[in-house]
Image 1 (cartoon, rainbow, N blue to C red):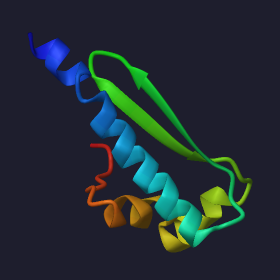
Image 2 (image 1 turned 180 degrees about the horizontal axis):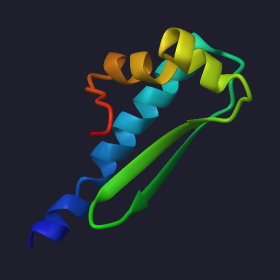
Image 3 (image 1 turned 30 degrees about the vertical axis):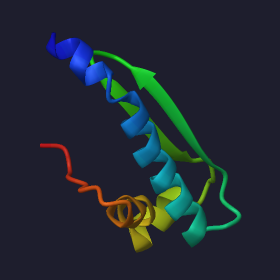
Length: 79
């Protein structure tokens, strides 16, 4: 069904997350950037910058937002 279809996108989700991580590393080469993939009712991934100053980088320069946009993704705030 639909659940299996959503879960089947795992490799595509992984590829996009890896691209976001690569783009993040390109902006901050010394940063510890990790990708975690998981499955709920769908395939999902999270890109994390494990640096104390990461919040500042995001606030000042949109580090992850820019990295995602460069990977062809659209970032929206939560409603």
